[in-house]
Length: 81
Image (cartoon, rainbow, N blue to C red; front, side, top):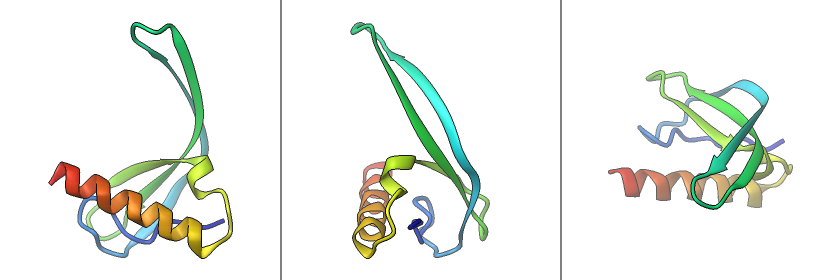
C-alpha cells in the first residue's frame, strides 16, 4: 500500500499511519444521498497533526498513487493557506 509522505498542514515528511481502515457514513443535506467510505488516518510525528484520506486514494502500490496523494495534499494546503 502506498502512503502519503508529507503532512498536509506543515508539509514535513514525518507521517505515520494510525488507523488502518475506518468506515464512515454521511448523508448529504438536501439530496437524501448516503455516502459511505473507508478512510485511513495518519499523524504527523513532528507536530502531531492528524489527517484522513479515503482508503481508495491510498489503495494501490504505485508511485502514481503516491504522487496523486501528495498532490492532493498540497492542493488542500494551498486552499487552507
